[in-house]
Image 1 (cartoon, rainbow, N blue to C red):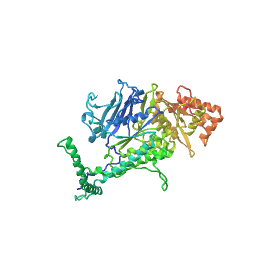
Image 2: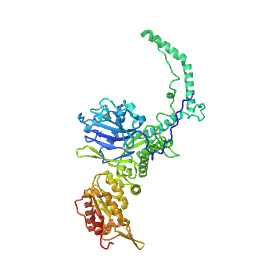
Image 3: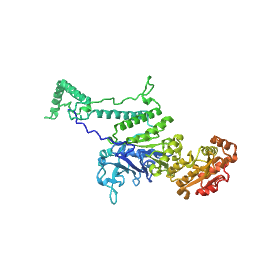
Image 4: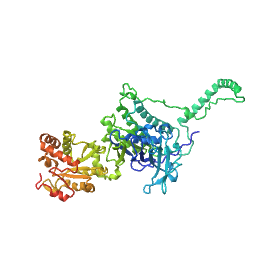
Length: 603
């Protein structure tokens, strides 16, 4: 008889617009783990978390921290001495990894473990794993109430095997995995798709008229296997009986009254007898009509690109089913996805990563050294900068969250266009001193000076906004850093000529928008706001170029030492607020005062 089919799941709205009720990681806090010392590193997770920072600063330790607590209960969830800071075990400063997870009714533990958000209704469960020595951790749960505390003897959900399905399953892809490991990761993803399809084919949707369900091909196959097994047992009965008799004669001499009997159990767990695909499928790659060797013989770039193809397949399969709540959520933990990829493949990998959470089943935590992987106009991305402190310990600071930036639709459109024009615009997220400029001419001039005087101008990021409106949007982003930066823009003039008519200059009105965005930080000297009178070239070169302005600036600086000195002085003043500005540049905080400093007859 056919198995009773499960009720078809109710359709759900598109996961990109409606919050999906699914378990997900909300916050991860780490202490005394590998490069991370006594000062905790806390990561607040959106759909996408990008970890940036210098080499060997502790980014990969953050990925490993989540993976190790999710492996609690297995050998891989145990720590070695090398996992303790500097390889030194200090019982007074144990390894601590704290996790806060969003849960829903079907995955929720008892009420005493649940903190509810009064606005969204979401439920949070907080847990902590502690290692005082190598080996297994002690897991405790935070009991909500007055005063909240870590419970000494109980934990949410109970045993690790029961608790794990309530949290996203980790998928770790390291930067320098072996060819075999990289290939296995792709094959595993593809096998999961096949196995899911087999599972779906085991059941038949119930007929609408309530009639008897006809056996599926899968069920017919099980019946055939069962009948074949019985035939084999019957055919072998004589030989089995002879072996049993001889064994029992020997057993009875040692254990009188005892006997053995062989039961083939042909009718039990027939599903387990079936293997539809090879245990180790091969993934081949090569010309369509030529020789295709195993993927592990290909280059690293090809293998990693295949991984993105497999991830896209998983994403599209989930989206096609329109049932983002039917399977356990996942979190992709990936080191340097840009590694060994062609520029086009880097952009494709970035797109796939950012689109992955739209299925409703994925979060992504990625380490990167590529600004291409920072997409400022997205709503689902947090950026955390990880750095080494002077004492050698790692620290992590969430330097960007879209909700805190409060970007409006115009901001997002500006940043989207800027990303298309300049994929390295987000380089300022990686540290250093930031100078935000209006256009290509300023960027070219400062780049020339920095190349000529590398010892004087180190670790400076000159970010070109390509327009005043985008300066406003980028200021919203930079204001979250808590680090000083400077803005250089053209003052322009209050009026302009258009087709022989004097009009209000829209470029002038943008000045006030820039100031409004930074005024609080200007007052505390966290930002230096500087205008070039009236534009960059007349202010510092004495002439205005009507075309090819960046090339003209480069040539002028090569041939004119005085111009070089003025631009170098300007750049120095933009990164050191105590330095004086050159003639032609003015620091301002009042639009009327700025107007009074304009040349009487500006060119």
